[in-house]
Image 1 (tube, rainbow, N blue to C red):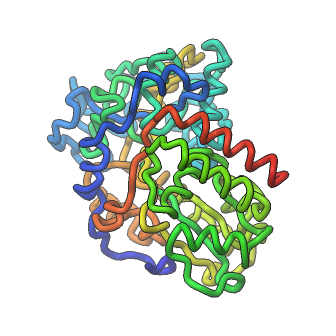
Image 2 (spheres, rainbow, N blue to C red; image 1 turned 30 degrees about the vertical axis):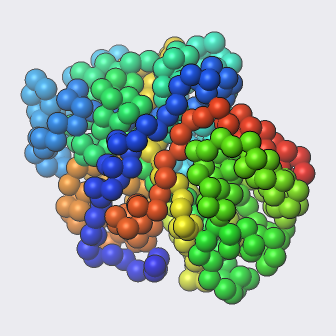
Length: 421
């Protein structure tokens, strides 16, 4: 695929295969997995209460027909209530346009925001679990399959959906997911995938498979390679490279994965970095495992730093890779839940959502995405790193939460100790 061209026409922005991947599978397992999970993780879906009824009531980018009347993008009297004040968000790095969590939020809805970042769902859940309901955070953005355990452990609270009327702007394909069928706790923030990004002046061959990625990390990019700072993703990459199901729990496979990742790969890793784009622009890595949006951001940051982005290449890992959906949720014990509802509602205004998309580089799940891009972001760059067709989505697999997750995190910790990173 080419990543340096603007895309005047986007083919499939909400492919049917995405709906199949996320709604026709049992994507989480309860029982022993939930009981033994000290690092339970989170996520969300999103709905107007109809669980993906599919009727498009959007009047256009500037206004939305909500239950009880029309809510124009500038009319916040029905949703702010006591929202004025400070809003604390705990989220993934580089996951919102700084303007939207800064001066625009304060100007539009009277909210001053404080944002902190985590590297993995495990870090998020540990933080919320150990706080006893007093984390100080209002909004969190966990990944889908983790939400049942978060609900069970009381880490997130139900929405007052009357305060989020703009939920109707979300495409039904991204609503009513198995982890939250009625969208009582969550609404889609973004969805994306995982691949790798490399400097073709250092690694002159094409990298196609996850086996290629590991080989290059241990050879041309040895000492200049970064991987995501999350155990399930590293376990996943090993499985994808070896024809295994990353939702499997076979002890022999886990042992083989640990032997490779700890004893063979770890010594070549420079850093465990869930957001490598800035370090890439600074020349820190020649090869990085990355989520698609962060890799896309690297192109712009390389250019801003005076480098040559054209020598960098991006690829989805094959033969299989990840499909994930992150979601907005409100933390239990949130100091300012009214502000949390107001900000989420504002972020679901199409113009705001597309502004955010242009920054972070992930599909935001809006209805009529082709039309929105044409009207609001006609010069969108590297769109093929945001929007994937059915063939690409068919190679993606969604994580299940199994009893093996603690072992996956243990492997990550052993890798870090071995790498000294």
